[in-house]
Image 1 (cartoon, rainbow, N blue to C red):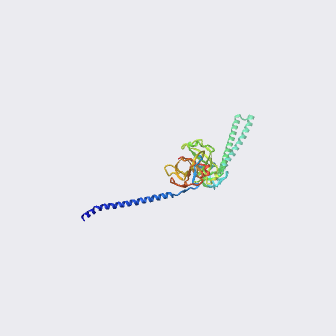
Image 2: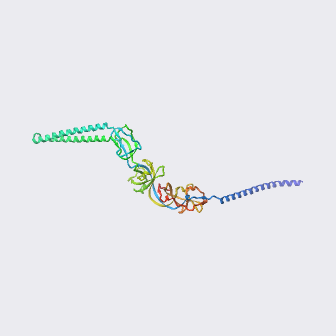
Image 3: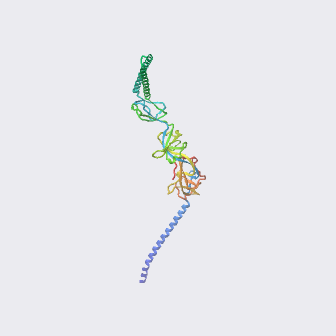
Length: 401
C-alpha cells in the first residue's frame, strides 16, 4: 500500500500536464477549422463578386482631337459710345426728369438752365453792338466830309489820315461788339441740354432745381447696342494676338457664351503690369440681355489649333499622388497615370489634353466614380469616341499641369 501511494503521487503532475496539452491541442484544432471556414467564405465571395455594368455615356474611347489653343483674357464690358452731359453755363437746373434706365435719343432735350442771366447778357451785348454800329456811321460821315475838304484844300492831309484811323477804330469796335453778342447768344443756346447720342441714362448726378457750375456733370448716357471688352494680355502672350481673331467670352456667373473679335491692340504696354490692352468687339450683344457696361467677362482668344489626345477634365482623378485616369482593359479596371496639358471648353464641359495613355484606350468618365484596380466591368457594345461637340471645341483659358 505504501508503494502504491508513492506511485500515485509521482503520476499526478504528469496527468495534469497531459490534460493541459490536450486542451491546447483542442483549441488549436478549432482555430484551424475556423480559418479554413473563413478562407472558404472569402473564396466563395470572390467567385460571386459583383460585375460593374457600364453605360454607353460612362466610357469614352481616347482619340486625337483638334484642340483650339486659347489665350486667356478677362476684362470689363464698356460701351463704345458713351457721353457725359455737362452744364456749359452756370445757373439753376430746370426740367430734369430723366433717371437711370430711361432711354434717350440723339438731340433730345434732357434739361435746361435758367435763362434769366443769359438773356440779360444777350441784350447787353446786342446794345453794345448797336452803339458801336452808330459810332461807325458817325466816323464814316466825318471821314467823307474831311475827304471833300482835303480835295478843296481847306484841311491838311494829316487831318484826313486821323479821320480814317478813327473810322477804322470804330469799325473794329463794332466787329468786337458783334462777336460779343454772338458769344452771348451761344451761351443762351447752351442753356438747353441735349443728348448727343441714342442710349440709356446710366447715371443722374444732380437733382432738378440745383444751381450748377460750368462743366458740372448732369447725366451719363451709354449706348448698349455696341459694346466692347478691354482686356489686359501679358506681354509674352500679346505677340500671338492679331486683329480679327475671334474669342469666346462668358459673363461672370453664367454659362452663356458671347462671341467677340479683336478690333484694336494698344501700341504700348501699361507701365506697371507690362500688360498690353486689347479691345474686343462683342458681336452677339443681344444674346445676353443682362449684358451691361461695367460687368466682368472672361474667356479666351482663339490662337490656332493642335492635335492631342483629350478627355473630360473630371475624368482625370487626383485622389492619388499623381493624376490618373481609369481605363477598361479587357473586362477589368486599370489605373493609368497621365500628364495633363491644354484645356478647352465643349458645351459647358472642360476637356483636357493628356499624355501617358495610348490612343484607343477606353476611359471611364467621372460618373462611374472611383473603382479599385481589378474591378470587373461589363462594357457596352459600342463605346462612343466623344460627343459631337468635341469635334468643334470652343477655346477657354489654356492651362498646364
